[in-house]
Length: 294
Image 1 (tube, rainbow, N blue to C red):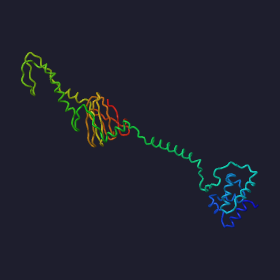
Image 2 (image 1 turned 180 degrees about the vertical axis):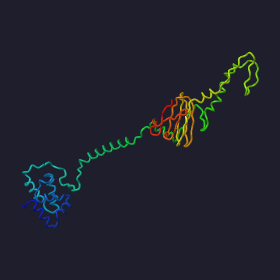
Image 3 (image 1 turned 90 degrees about the vertical axis):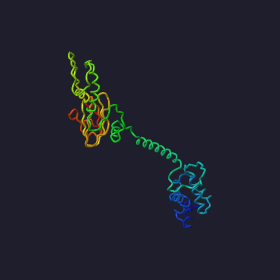
């Protein structure tokens, strides 16, 4: 009988069909149709697939498939082909564009899932917020300082704390001079001192100037070129001042040295200690300066 491929090609041409017409109807590729028409069955996936393709092609051309299949068995009798039975030898083959095999789908899904896990871990680690350090907290306090428990009274800008503290120092020391006064009845205290009785020693005069000096202590003078928040603590860690200095103003703070200071926006603040200028620049980190004045 004529060759298998010749029979198929001659019948196809007699029907006026092209290779692409047959390939589209059978869901095959053009090369697979050409392999059937040229008896190149070795180019097909296996003998079982070759039989299925040939049966479908013969059915499409309205030919009897039995003699063609018998000729195929004789043609491939000497070839070491895979003769394992398949459950769906007549099934349709995927088109040329369908390249993804079903067996590779689970592997692709697993790989995609692992990629999503790695991506989500990187995302949350990248956007984790760091804990703010002390310098950032101090800089935030410049804009919105929180109320601070102040043990010592806070004086308004422009007033001298030494003048406010001096009367208290005088009052507290006045009783100390009372035992030295004579036991005789004397007139009430007036601007001029009362003379002691004859024969008794004169009472020691009360000197109020040292008390004022003690109350005044060391002095810090601030000048603000821009608004800046600052805090001053004395040697006993007592808050002497905590607040905001306004642009173009000055502030004087007195107390017991050494002082511990925190100054925000420090590059725009000038400081003098007991009349001598103090350089804060070496202590500035970002915009906040933390330092001690002896």
